[in-house]
Image (cartoon, rainbow, N blue to C red; front, side):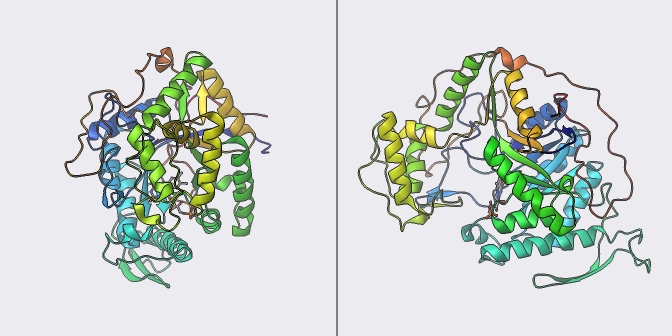
Length: 468
Ligand SMILES: Cc1cc2nc3c(=O)[nH]c(=O)nc-3n(C[C@H](O)[C@H](O)[C@H](O)COP(=O)(O)O)c2cc1C
């Protein structure tokens, strides 16, 4: 465990188009209207979160050969949204998920440096390698790279972007005073010219990484300032934290140079019971009847539309060879037959319907309780080195009327009314955690070669620091 008190870092995550965000709620807003993004970002800024974080999906998901619109379809371009948000926020970090497999360094380095200028030093880049060849069909180069090559390209991409950011128009980085000159050759890139954006306030925008594999962790240890992980539980978080922090020394870095922030969700209530009940309702909103069948089909590799979501699991086994029933999304298991056996056992033991089972096995609610309980749990996670902070996903995007409409000819939509029981009003919605005075913004100036993690520096909410 760390010896010094740690400042808790908080990010507000807009995860995009999937059932985690309850788009089917009549009170949800649009996933496209700028108002949704502004509302969430300004709320996070008022709550003194460190940064706002956009996920990225470069191709529409397909299920059984048709566009998947059980949730919502499509989203606007990440950098365009973040640039617009720069104008309506003043001190919130603005992080975009951007693929290192399907972009080019010169263009992306320019865009990120530009966002850093427009936002006065608030830009951050979540480097993802994108997970399937299906997505690659959208792009000029087509095809795809295997897993190891994707990470080699990612490492080369970040190295190249850093070189470009270090070749500013004031010639300061070049001993010969050459203005913006760069030349980069490696296995993936062969580029030269002048970088056309003056040095940005941060110099190097903050780099985030969200892969989980051996190569992903090694890449993060070498090149990232933050990891956005999937390990939100206490024990798994500690194991991940120890593993990744131990890798840093090999890259000449100290443990505090890489922050670990799992993606988590919160459900609050005035009492523990109220929070638990709200969490249960939200789970059934996230997993509609059609959604449960669809999820099961992804594991079974079969059309199961004839099954009743409120009935038992199908007697037939999964088709282990049909991995392509859903495209644009990672398959949940390499061994569907073994998973089906496990799920049958859980369903039989708990007398669970298909929908109940999917609610049970896909639950991702990390913190459920009163504000004080959740704050204490957060404190415990950070104090005992399960993480350095948390990236939180807002489950209902905003208040207002729903403007999402299904597209004709696309995949099944859940009829309204198959969803959850009505919501109860919670006093906790009005809860305002204690805030501390906002410290000065991060000063501008020449960037260090490897910037410390200071997206939205010092703007931490909830007045928490973790002491042993
Ligand atoms: C918490 C989390 C969030 C992610 N968000 C995105 C995303 O928004 N867009 C994307 O293309 N990939 C996203 N990914 C996928 C990863 O960046 C990565 O491509 C994938 O996990 C495969 O890498 P790995 O084999 O190292 O795990 C996310 C991964 C994690 C763990």
